[in-house]
Length: 351
Image (cartoon, rainbow, N blue to C red; front, top):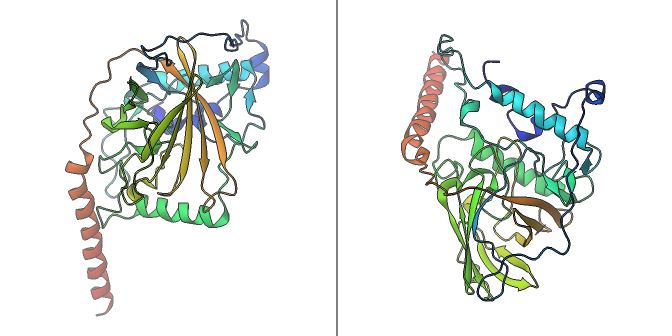
């Protein structure tokens, strides 16, 4: 196994790596997670609101959309635990062959090997159930793009991933402004590494510090949205309390973060998309995170997802992204080189 990333490039692949039923039948001591205590009383701030402060993780091998191998939202415990064990084996071998040498000229040089990845090792658990996807509505666990919405998404993804002649076309993540894959922009998704967030809380605002690219989203409590002309990188977030649940509504996203795809998924929202998040502390070590996304221009219906945020050890260290500073000149130079070669070939063909 030279490179675990080649075998498990996304969390969805890890889920599909479950072994055959005959092997599962031989397993013992299958653990079933317990449902959350409906009478749980959260710790509280001085103003009486639930205390979310501290570091939390959304790392998981569950992804936003359901893998084609699963028909249902809930995964049987034996399947879930077998997938977790397979994921651990895939990532156990972290070395590449130093004698392998460089790839041939013109070939893809690859990316990180598994040593640098930390997607998580567990399938997501929501109220005692292993989940095959974060999406719960629609029932098929898939993003409900309309035909026009999917075409818009595909065009945006193609421009960001396959165009190298304009720095402003490259993704916001590559330019080191916002983390890739919607890791910190509502809705917050899990990605291949750096999945931590940290909550800071006062009666006037709640701030969510995101590990990936070290963005800080400020949620203004009991406030109105700013003018739509003020497009912020993480959107304009306003919040209020619904009992013990923090409800956050976000829209007016910066247009440069509409394309939020990652290795695990193609994900696209528009600047005017509306995202409603709900945060409820259901245990000492768990925040129940729900979100509903509404945009009739690209989706056939509002869609809803559920996922846990797990208590994690801090602190969060700075994510000192540099790719936008160091690599973009090389990316653009490569495009100029391709143009020059094409011109030379055309000139030669005309002789």
